Length: 116
Image (cartoon, rainbow, N blue to C red):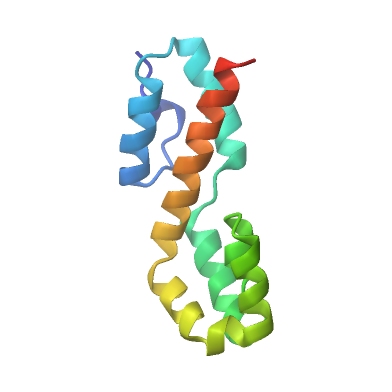
């Protein structure tokens, strides 16, 4: 059983718990491969926070594009972050946005490893 804390110590606690359940049945080699792939795909909550803050300076929606929500990103861009209301909500929920994206990427990484 591989410890995700050893492989990726920079994860947020809730993300670490989720990823640990995915890595638990893996061998050490598989866990290292997972960590390598997942680390390149995940988004840091601080990156989401920084790009959300950019929305206050006229570049709204970047945070949504980074988490794969293309439609909302374009909508935020053309509406000024839905008149800044959506940007403020994303500012408050930046960790949740990152967590939800990272969970999807972790699941995709595990699925990709199964079929390769």
